[in-house]
Image 1 (cartoon, rainbow, N blue to C red):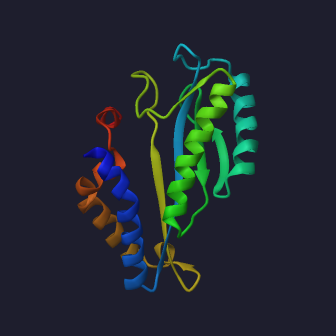
Image 2 (cartoon, helix red, strand yellow):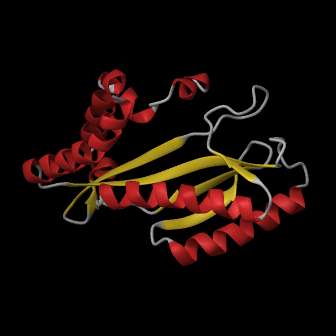
Image 3 (tube, helix red, strand yellow):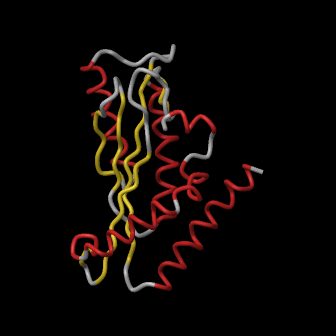
Length: 181
């Protein structure tokens, strides 16, 4: 059943994006921040800060060469934790595809360095968890409505909070995802 649901997520996303586009004059744009850990083969964080910094520089260069939406790769708070950031885009299907492809790319990159890239929500009980953060903006006539209209951002935040429960299957589809919460 979960496999069928996963397949349908792309269809649901496209239908939602089409519905929003057809019922609004505003354009929704989303950017993401995706966190993960680079680990040794025995699943331990890399303690050497210079090694982590060098890996991040190398990864940043390679990701920027291969992915159009990724604009930043930087050290995150956790030991050997990394974050990639995407630009804002109205094309959510492309954003999702690029995130999925970049995760595969990062795992291959780590494997080539004899490391493991872990996207687990909470790989260590005594360190930061990893997340996928969504950054939203709503544009009309080249203006970000979240900046120009406090009522719109308040209504959007209220709707996101009201609908969080029904979105959780998309945001945390695996049982282990809830360890972070």
